[in-house]
Amino acid sequence: MGEATPDPNRLDQMRDPYTVLGVPRSASEKDIKSAYRKLAKKYHPDQNPDDPSAHGKFAEATHAYDLLNDAEKRGQFDRGEIDAEGNPRFAGFGNGGFGGGAGRGARPGAAGAGGFSAEDILKEFMSGFGGQPRGGARPGGGAGGAQWDPFAGGATGGAGAGAGARMKGDDVVVNATVSLEDAHKAASIPVRMPTGKVLNVKLPEKVEEGQQIRLKGQGTANAFGEPGDALVTVRFEKSKVFRRDGSDVRTDVSVTLYEAVLGAKVRVPTLDGSVELNLPPGVDTGKALRLKGKGLYGDGDLYVNIRVVLPPGGDPDLEALARFMRDQKPYKVRD
Image (cartoon, rainbow, N blue to C red; front, side, top):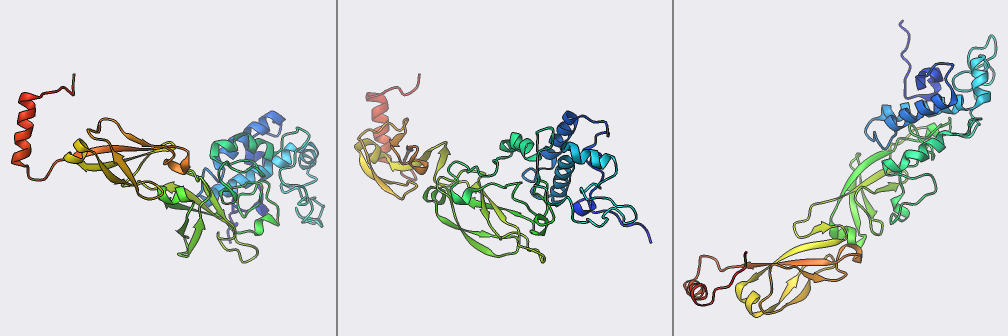
């Protein structure tokens, strides 16, 4: 029989930490930290949501850094006293020895003598992935807007995940297309999971494009522990009625020629429903009419562009009036 190929996604088959980080045994603390930063950025779960192997490589790199960053553990490993997982080696009993579970009780991401833990390094660049350190709430996200937390532990992504964390199932990422109206009202929307199951998800107040909503226990099931979570990423759908301009919203309203000339009351759509707008006589269609506070989340305004629509098929009387104005009462609208 041939030799079994190690699974790179399993921490219980940890490779030599120097090999994982791609540094020589003589590497300085600075070199080790720099190597880990590059690997963590490359394989971070937020950067590779659809690549389970990247999650495993991320966890493996974090585990390797935690071991080599601890001066005492690094010395023990270099002397052959512990294996790549931090378990003691005893002569005659293989890598696991009597203490197969020893070394797993250390806090994941614990800082070594160098003073830089894996958690410290991740916090430096997590904001670039749209996340935040543990305990930080995303502005406007509310309870449902939590981001992926690499220190919460998971089957493939927890930083320095230990044996207990590996019992949790994988997280899944799902996109949810949301209308501006639903986002504005913080409505509940149906979201279909990869399994086909449909969940009713309450949107956070003032939800933003790209924000993630964590649904605890709705990820991949695990026969040996709790299931992972579902991360619902919010995407705004293109509206046929409104155009978003930051916090402001724009819309078009069609009016007849006589309404534009004589003035009228017309119904105008808003994110909260239709309202009645008074058009002044001779309204200037070159300028938008502003409805203050009617923008997205009430933080902006609604701008209404008036479009004059002529009667279909032409009209002899209108044509005669137009010729009269052209000949008797001309005016300039262009330079």
